[in-house]
Image (cartoon, rainbow, N blue to C red; front, side, top):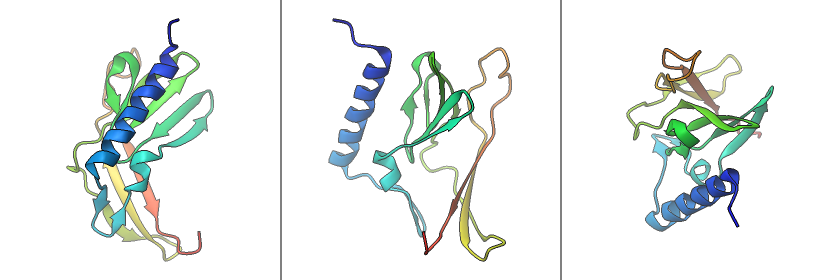
Length: 133
């Protein structure tokens, strides 16, 4: 029996999850604590693509390397949009138009190797602190 690539990927992600728990790793940027998102990746659909994000780490993206934010299609992972840089990118804290505190990360280190990806992709992640959520 040969395991499917997506099953192998999930198995690798689970092993990374266990290693992080054993190492009691944290993901904090001042008052912003993203530790929970290290072990519980965020998935969303964007048109024909699936975007997956994990905080303070990088997911395996098939032949493309590893990325904190990956883009997949029915063919599997096709690119990483941003890579975690061991905390070098720090968020900018501000107040949005609704009076809520927000933290904005700017990453400019995504995959550059495809036919339409000659320059690094830019990604902006915004975390809004909503006490009513």
